[in-house]
Image 1 (cartoon, rainbow, N blue to C red):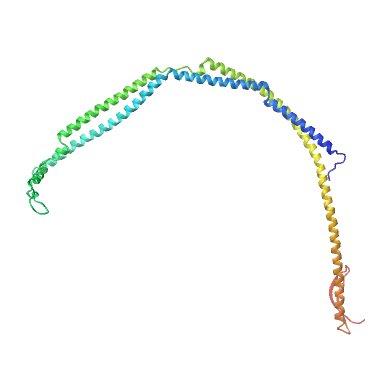
Image 2: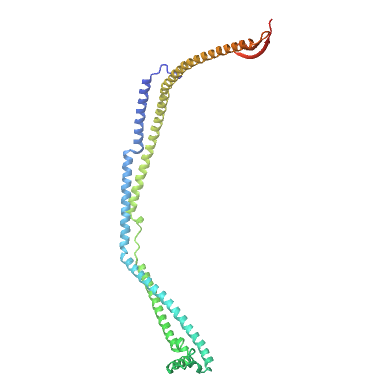
Length: 341
């Protein structure tokens, strides 16, 4: 049971309330010292304003630089589109020229092959049997026979690789070479014109080299130094208030621990009352059980006596001692033969 002699619960409550109010007041002053300093807030506001002006000046400088070369960049973009189109046409022309050269070479080779075949078949003659139908074995019409003779005598080189066909393909190749050369020249001319325009671009001074940039950045740097100085002072004040608040918190905790004694005493007293009531109830139950045990003991002794008398009535010269009463009042089973004397 905690000792609460001489303690005033109401006085403790008033003391705890007073300490809590002092702690709350110090916390307000601490918050003001940390972020509510008028000078520091003013300096931060000025930094924000100067930073905004710096951003606006940079954007204006960039826009001016872009406008300075706007027409040249537009012309370069148009030439770039033309160059891409010319490059695509040049690529197509080169592919067509490559295929044409391959086809010309292939036709020349095929002509030589066919000329060799032609020389080989010069000795062949017309088969008169070819003028008979292989199915009905009748002679074919004159028109059909004439077509067969022409087909036999026609040299395949006239269809696949004649001298005229090769000459025509060579002319196409030359034409494609001219197209490819013109497109290549066009790509080169466009590249030269783009290079000339790039040389005409004007390089504006970097924003960081301007007087406005130097002025604004110097202003921002000075304001940041001021904020650091003010913040240092605020941090020192914050540490002072933190120490005072820590002391008050310790006192409040100590008073609360003393106040907690009253709650402990009340709890212990309630427990004592509960245990006292429980003790009375157990005493009542104990007495009832003691009485029950006493009645059981009387019943047992009466039963033993009647049992002994009943058994001994059966014998004349001896008797039996079947139970022995012990010092603690209990009954122990026994079987002793007793004779007179």
